[in-house]
Image 1 (cartoon, rainbow, N blue to C red):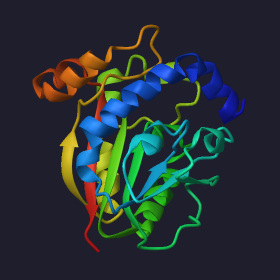
Image 2: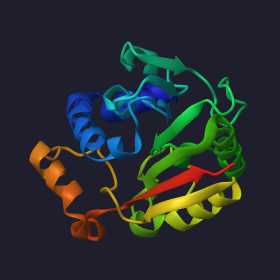
Image 3: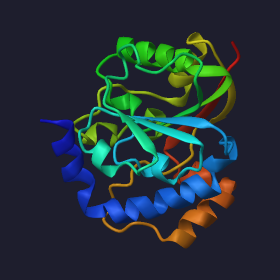
Length: 217
């Protein structure tokens, strides 16, 4: 089954709602790490909800899904590339790499390690790496409900892998967002804004980790 078919089945019917949610997530939360002069790469960009909505000088989306190039905004350069192989990106040229719900789809830990090495290579010294993904410590009962999940990852295993790749951890939130956006009824914009502000409720609903790390090379 192709990546295109899997994601079309899962997300096409809620694409507009997901885009609205990501507009709020980028503007009200993730933009704090992105300068207006930054070069940003969205790893496993999918439908480009993050990269289309973030404000940056130069924007890249990397994904093997052929739909990505159709979803990317005009100011986004799409790289159709296997993220675990040597990247077609100049070393030390990226200010921030962002990835959401991507690493669990890699087919081995070796692929994960290779991917992290490529991220480290691409980032400039002082560059930022932000990783968001399902935390198996809090969603183990439903983690395997998606056919394309291969790697069971937690905040702890990801921190160890990221540190071994040469990064310095800046922030770890074991329980950030709810597990998935593949819901029947999406949350309202007001709920999303309130959720981001009320950090004390994150440990109640959050089942995805958030890790922010820096390239100190």
